[in-house]
Image 1: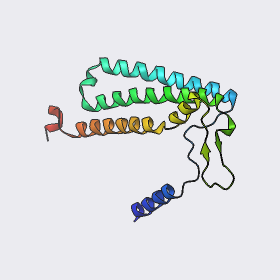
Image 2: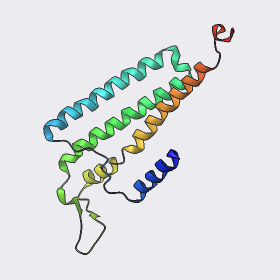
Image 3: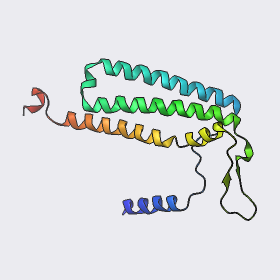
Length: 155
């Protein structure tokens, strides 16, 4: 019953959207710290992926999925950083509502604005990265549940 309730709630959320803001706006001082956090995330994920690839764990399918998710998450963080930088150059009148219209129009004044709005689809990278992490962890858990060493097979 709870699953049906949450499914109906999810469908209502999809059919009656209000605002879909992919980038979280930050004040200028907060943006610099936020950008540094993206940079440090990229660096730490890079070292994690390289180190994990060098170990014997990289031969396990679950770990390969986690490492792939790490690379996709690095790409997500990089594109999000670029989107935050481009946010400085976006004019306030890029999205406007003409008189008598119910759907706002988007006015692109250059390639920076086009790239900014394209990068707003950052969930197309974040969701697959999280799925790869989930799938990798699930494969590792399933692999540990099956008897793989002599200790686990003995009664």
